[in-house]
Length: 113
Length: 113
Image (cartoon, rainbow over all chains, first blue to last red; front, side):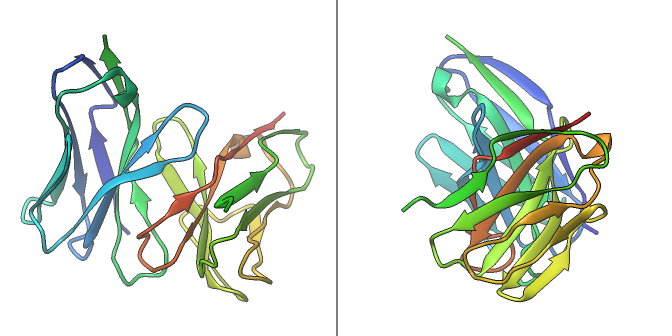
């Protein structure tokens, strides 16, 4: 089955700096790659996603890049703010395979004011 | 519009006890899933359903049962609780396949002693 590795497990940045979280996946059939943000005591919330026919997607301060050949994708957050502090998860799925997402292990991002 | 509602929020069980974690959604989503979240391991799929009357196993189904008698409800049953089932459990629903468009509940924190 699919295996998703996520790095780093913790990331500390100064407010205003950029943060990058990287994930690799194993199944070349995967074609959907979402990123989730989880705040303390809450469920994960989708913040951005990308499909395999797209190399990059941006939404304000957040961007995701995908390299299908290398089977890795990354989350980029620019101009970080304290409210960006949370746990971020990457995930991968085969779009027509039931309802299954395979998640990475998570990255705890801390933005210091 | 409540989204995905999970009850209870917290539960302590003794080894060998059984219980049901409730999940209800009011978005008329066909697809529902149960995940467990353990430190450093991301979220792992327990069971999922693609519609009323249809369920299937995920990555870690042992020790859990599910049923889907209505579109709205997807309860998760622990048959005989074990300490290894101490975790945070999330229910999610979606309007489409492949893990896209997930809405997560706020979770149930279960401790088995």
